[in-house]
Image (cartoon, rainbow, N blue to C red; front, side, top):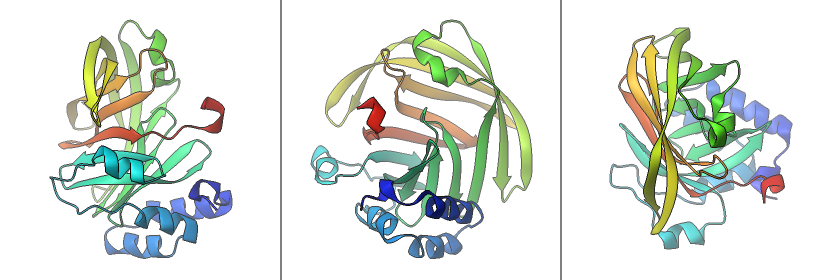
Length: 229
């Protein structure tokens, strides 16, 4: 059975557990997960250091969706564990878990002593990147551990820039560059997104989860819902 077919009840239980653990406890949660999810997290392991970078052959050899992750404290190729109610749960080996929404935005992460949850209040302009023209505001709220901050408001201003050529696994993509200026709650930073001009799919992004902590994501083998195939 594919990990994407895991029962939703088990998926929700794992996600709740992941959101309440840090450090070594996260490893125990992953060991206790379903056999399908465990097979996914073990199927594509690369050493955690700042030099990790997947090759086209490595990505092609793995049948699961994959994302290149780069952060200040880790570098890895993440594999998709499961999808539940539109939320995608990705494993960076046994070190961390990242949850993305259908637009490719990070909604939570746990592991390596850090837990963050990020949510957008109201209508999300990321649902309509193909038609976005002028600047638009994005109201976010963050919860973070070990900072013990809850519902910290951060205002983003999303602006469409020009086309950029982005190379991913030896293939060139002509993508629209968007910038999101973040202010409030200690944030003074800019998120970057590179999206397909026809579909709005975000192939590459650099997203801030906390002041001074940015995560870069590159879609190597994207997850495609059945309806979108």
